[in-house]
Image 1 (tube, one colour):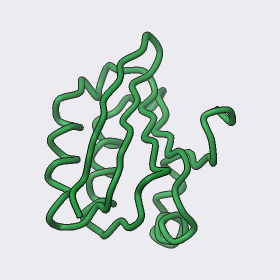
Image 2: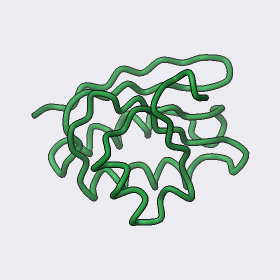
Image 3: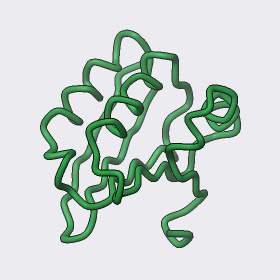
Image 4: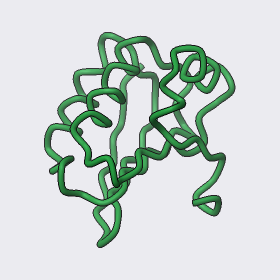
Length: 107
């Protein structure tokens, strides 16, 4: 499955809307989208994962890359990740570095 990425800028945050699976074949597309952002100076980075069915370790690496490039003052927020993805993020300890919410209204 392909990965579709929509990128939307706002004054206080940047939103990436993802659709598809994030695996070794599609993670480079996510890395590319993240590389195009000024991660060190953007506000919060919100990633809408409502339409992501699967995320491999390659996807975790992309998220970790983004968080490492961001200012400690800004948040990496994952919106609508499914239970399997949340479980992997929690077990790897990445949940200490990201904010997990079920909808945009929780932010």
